[in-house]
Length: 170
Length: 307
Image (tube, rainbow over all chains, first blue to last red; front, top):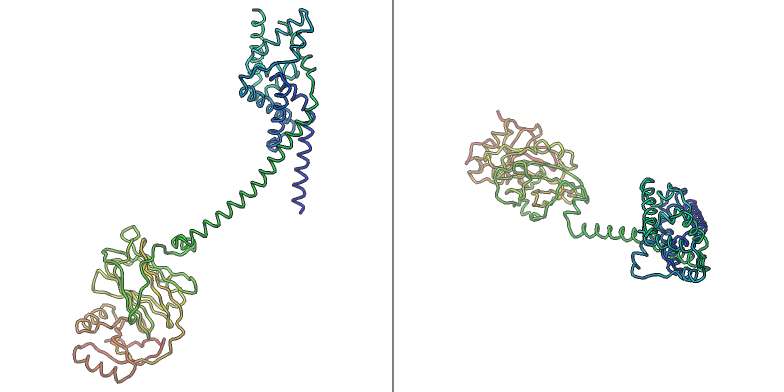
């Protein structure tokens, strides 16, 4: 049963490469999810859903060099779906509340304002900001994840920064 | 605003605590995926099995439920519904419906279930006809031949297919007869040995299916045939036939002799005396030249050409 064996071997190899992909990225996934929902439980739910979705469609990934991009895309879509589903639930960032009571300086106030400004952005703008500034991704990478041309990402990013500026100036 | 603030936030982002449950959660996600995939792959296998079984069941069902479908699978050159299986009385039978302008458009032969079959198709213009035209069939022995008369038919384009029929195992000859009635077509299928025969009439589209099998039960016997001379032209045979008919001899049949000339076989008798008696009586009624020929089994009728 040479064929059966090689098929199993192939499956096992695929499974192993998938597991290592998840283990390398799980913290990044959690952080991005957390930035969207701002609480631990929801972020964990999103990560679990993402891992599940990725597992059942991993065989569809044709080029290994894109699997990171692909995984991030699943996470972002899952997060946005999650937010849309739970639109009415206002999540509280417990950490944030704690910090507000601890510090009281100008720089901190500004940071808080930026944070609020980010919250006011739409899904796509928020995604671009998170990936660009928090994950330090290149515009090209972001473009691949969001499946849009680089120029679109660029303009989304500048519009987002612009809006935040306006909000800050109020 | 300052990009500096964003980098502050990034620091905060990097400091997001990774909860200890993360590993468990990821593991759960993988397990869920694994179960789903296993289920899916077994489902796929089940699906293939199920569809295969279903397909087979459907095929069996349709073959059994619809004979037409079954026949179409067997690659048999006739379809349609069975109207009747002919009942023969003294080797004669008839059937069909009254039509006009039909064409005997196709003849074909094929083998099935140990029978040699001959199919006759009918059409009207370019269309296959739905009902078989009125017909009469008779089968006689020594020589073993089947004569078919199809009325309401004015065309016999299947004459071209005679060669196909000659390939059939039992057929010795097939030929058309001259017929005075221009709305009828007659033809004879001669066999090279005694045959068991079965004829089916079918409709939608119309066809006659003659199934033949060697009849091994028939014993060779000697007959005395009361017959006419051989006519150089089929036309004369038909004209003599007409004369005989008018004086009440409707059992006669037209056949070909060993050299391919037509003659009329008026009647055949088992004893010479009977034949001679009949000849004497008949001679009084008509001036047709007749003779008595002694013949057995498949022996070919001799040729006695008329002047």
